[in-house]
Image 1 (cartoon, rainbow, N blue to C red):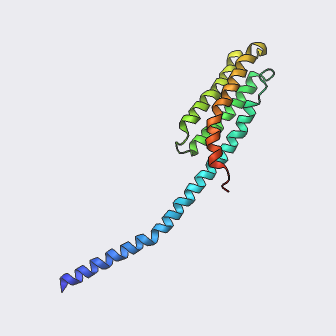
Image 2: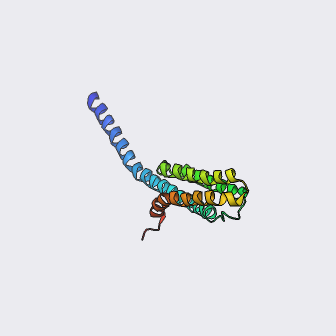
Image 3: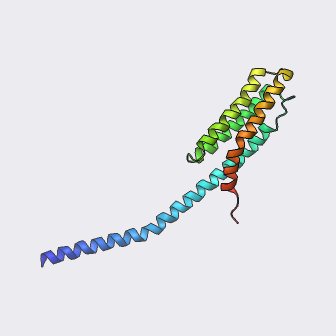
Amino acid sequence: MAGRLLTWRHTRRSLLGAALVIGILPGVAACAGQQEQRSAQSLCARYQQLGASMDALKSVDVGTSSADAIQARADAALVKLDQLQAVSEGQYDTLISTLRSAINDVKQSAVDAGDSFAAARQERQVAVQHLAQNLGPLKQRLDEQCSPRG
């Protein structure tokens, strides 16, 4: 009799535990789904901010902008790129690294030439074109992820 009582108690505990787990799973799944949605929204918001910063850097007039102005735009773009990388969960690290290098090239072209506009124009123009080319693959991937689903 004592053995049956222990078996019944054990079975009852197991059933209660299973019911509790089954009851909690939908809530955990919902929370995970909400977290994933918040992460995607944060990623897309950071991407929009990076886009504005990149537009400002790509639109720099390499013939008339000062080295300091170009460096300031490059620094702003690097900050936005770091913020994007912080929420990207490693998905775009290679593309981000490539873009970071291109931004640094633009920044370095400004440093190397200083305010000598004639000497700097060609180097800066090449660096900005390189920047636009390296932005393309990241932009394509994030445009796909962040476009409204219809």
